[in-house]
Image (cartoon, rainbow, N blue to C red; front, side, top):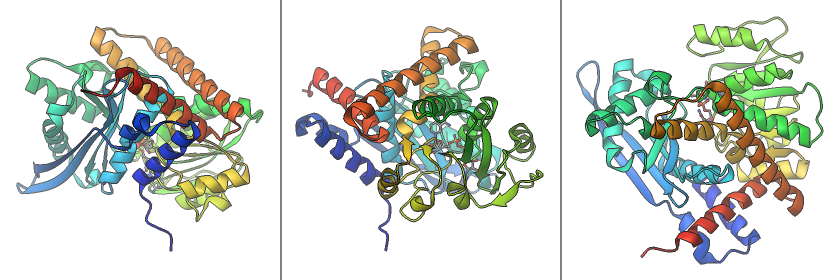
Length: 418
Ligand SMILES: NC(=O)c1ccc[n+]([C@@H]2O[C@H](COP(=O)([O-])OP(=O)(O)OC[C@H]3O[C@@H](n4cnc5c(N)ncnc54)[C@H](O)[C@@H]3O)[C@@H](O)[C@H]2O)c1
């Protein structure tokens, strides 16, 4: 029987392996095995019918070694402590890979937001913000959107924090609406970053011309990646979301699908296209394609389906979509995998731009944002690639080597307090 997948054990395994690879002394990497601060909050929320319902939330700050903590907030019924810990650790590594002056954190609330009304969701978001308020702030920890959280909710967080501070604090959260200090380009930044990394990887592996791409998840990340990769001339042959999936060998009509989603609660359900057949979300992962982009939830590529994956290149847009066992299968099969901490870092890069603009009360134009995003993503890809080529290693290992080296250097420079 397969053991229950623990995403935090997965991260520890990776850290240990990287430390061995780099011949690190235990003293220099051991602190990164432990999150600096784990906050668990109980959230009473008055529901629309008048009764009080309890929710559980987390904010886990993995490391502030390289700068203030940074990471999204996820609203999902399956949020648990190990998952949030792993995601926080992933943020520390991600910020280090793209060389941002940030540490890593993550937040989560155990809730199915589709079961809440908008007013209930607002009260829950504000209560969660108040509960973690002493631990967040522009110099401490800056949340952002993740699964099932969006710019509007970031606006509620900004407002709650500002009201309780007595003055506007836009830099407390990123991914906000533009009119209260959000950055142009932030909403599509992760999908754009995924597309830039895919483009660089295709160049590196001489996969020329239009490629067949399958994307699991058509939310913020998946849909923006689909639009941009479609605009780059690739065929998006498969897509899926929580309501189902579609496959068309000749390539799906992405603009029409985006229009349908906008009308139907961001869901694919009910969309029809000539030549497109309905497939399940699991089937999408093993469909006939050149590039597979998991852009939904973690732990979807496992020992059970890895052998059936047909793609030559996997670009991890979601956080932690591949288990350690699946990774081994891909290595054996010669499938190249670009890891999440590099592939989906575009969001945090533009979040960083947003925070910089907030702190300095500046407003950058979209071209500037996209140009700087492109430069940072391309540079990070090249740095990871150079390590992979030099060490003859896979890209995940190379990305971890880059991130862990930067973390350990910062740790050594700061020293151990007191
Ligand atoms: N939003 C960001 O800026 C950002 C940044 C970095 C990483 N990520 C990661 O990218 C992933 C997606 O995030 P998002 O912001 O697009 O979330 P989102 O909530 O906007 O979209 C999630 C998508 O996944 C789909 N989905 C849910 N369960 C599914 C299932 N079982 N099968 C297939 N599809 C399913 C949903 O229908 C939706 O289309 C997450 O792993 C997140 O942690 C997001």
